[in-house]
Length: 397
Image (tube, rainbow, N blue to C red; front, top):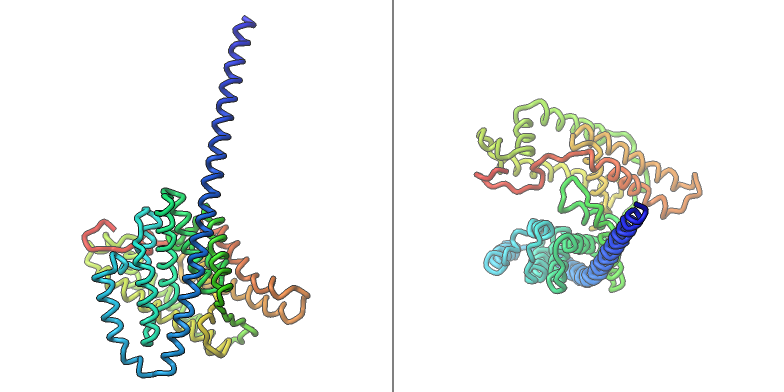
């Protein structure tokens, strides 16, 4: 009996040793894979840093040239037609823009290298002719293209490829806007509306800071405008409160608001009830753009009293955090904005010398609050099911 027990114990020890060895090998393999993805993230981000510097230089040159030659505005229709023709005939799905980058990140579909120079060329030409073309989309498309081709070149697949793509997106934002922390969270959130993929945090943070560092090292300059005072309660503030109340009433107390919420939750069901999904979405985008325009105007005209390309300085991501914190409701987002506004006001008050705190620490306080809110509430705040999801008539949506 003791002999049999001894043999059994020896077998268990051998089995445990084999299991521990296998686990150690798996751990070593995962560590090597993570190190490889990190190294490739640095490579892709450095390339994006170069592309971001060149893109910003081209945009600055286009802006300077346009301001010196006003007649260039007359070329805008020609530029628009030429851009549409290029994308349609030579874009190789590039006309899908950011949606192609999102699909590539999630599904692993490669992006043709042609997308990056095409985006660079057409965005610069649009700026030269006085058209409206933000840096966000163009930078994301170039960063996604670079990351996708690096992944294909080094045969990166699956979850590792997704992490590399997100790092490229983060690098694009850091290189184009000079806000690496916001860029990292942009990359983690862009492909998963209302959620943040923290598993890619290391790669996104590394990518964003590397892209920003390379862009700055090559000569990119970023101007940030700080809010120097707390605006007094005036007619504009009252109008904002009234606007928030009106939005809540329209969304929750009118038939049109019910249609909007139905389209956001289940567009296919709304379609079967006779609601024009595309038209409803279009109207919502237009109204949202108008309200965002008023918000930007209030910052440039009433608070910092001037306009620069970086006037907002990443505060749009604080607004996104407010929406998540407010559980995607107008009244909740309004309350969250008051909270973040109080944080910024506190920064201004403390910055006046009341408390001896370094200005760098004060500057990042609102963003630290944003991170805390995102960590605590992202998993509990659920976005509308169809938010950010394209809809085609006849699909199940």
